[in-house]
Image (cartoon, rainbow, N blue to C red; front, side, top):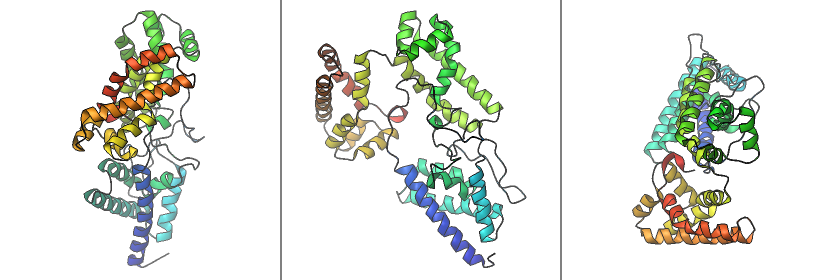
Length: 360
């Protein structure tokens, strides 16, 4: 056990810096992902630890604080034993209490991320996520450094079976089946056969808003039950709720029509983003990050003093090449390609005016 306070401070700061660097890269260098609402699926995207009913998202909000005994108060929704073990071992190695360790970690992390934001080295949203981990001690960054370890927590609502929109959707099928004039079994079977919710709504001649309202109400009920059962925190439920509106829109508007599927593919394709980034003279990731933060592609073009007509023509030229490739590969018929081509101006318009949460 070390007695020197200066040595302890130096060692703690050194370890915090290493953790912070790893976490910063994880939060700021993650590439943009494709939309999660393209088609319904019955399974979550990751497997929870055997001892949990549903892993928590540690980046949503810190929910624990040191107690009087010098240990972090337990949180049933965020009780990774490896994180707790790391905190315990780290505190013992330094010869300090866990409360003192966590307090020092939170202070150092807050001061460092604030300076990084001030210097333009870290996005404020990423800083807020990092600071949200601080109340649970340095062990909270363990999943960032060892993301595939047993018990590691996911960092997105889609990684949690309790909050995954696709799982919520499948659980809500019994609630919307009668509205579509189907039994739950019939609805499940038709979705598994490749029919889309959009097609089933059209076939039943039902107002899409009726289905959307029913789905969102059922989702809220599922999340409320999960909070009451201690499976997730209220903060996690609130975080999931923010994504559900656009997710439901994606399900309702996603037709199984090959033309509609092709249009959606073109809108979100890497080639389309590449065409825009080239004319804007910036990396694709930079462009996607700015769009994800709320700017539209058109606004970025105006800031770069790029003519709107030039931007539109570059994207449409790319789209035309992509359509030709789809026809050549046999993925789209010649007849369908004509319909897709006629829709290209609308695709361009939607692409350059997208922004915020709906862009990935």
